[in-house]
Length: 240
Image (cartoon, rainbow, N blue to C red; front, side, top):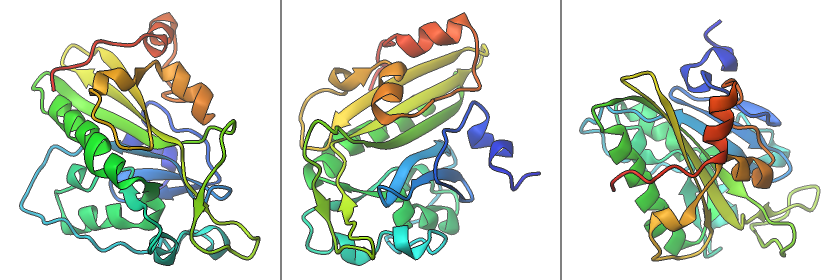
């Protein structure tokens, strides 16, 4: 059935586990009740750019139980941006498509200098990769990374269980492309949640490192020795 997560195109090559799977029209969220935010967001980059304007209608996602739901008040005067996991600029074919990227289930607390610079730079670079005529489809999964050897900051007011909205130490993005020869290629990144002027290539990691740090299985429907090698390698960065 088309309303089942594993029948969606975004999940063709795998979809990690989560407390709640949230299906949007053009992307899927794996939500964490413990962290009150997404564990991951999975999308196919939409190449059909139109004149749709950025919606900027940030709002709670009422599909998430209230006890675990982030609210606009959590971010107010926090010093952190409501950072997109699925970028607004990736979903510009229809107004409703863009609007859904502003649900708070797609947001995570990001340092302004991270959100508006290095993270935005990576999002733009992925769209450039997708624009390559040899690329048929570009799958992207993004999410937070917590380092429990370090203190975890939090923002907002406590919910009924005394839990606030924790701030990730870093964010990951893993990109899987399928090209006109049928080849699958992966690039993966982990970027600290802080301002940076370093080149994107300096944040490249193996896909396996993301799996270990974020506690996720990525692209798990892909099997075999070639896939294992691809997940363990750091592929040369495309031209940005």
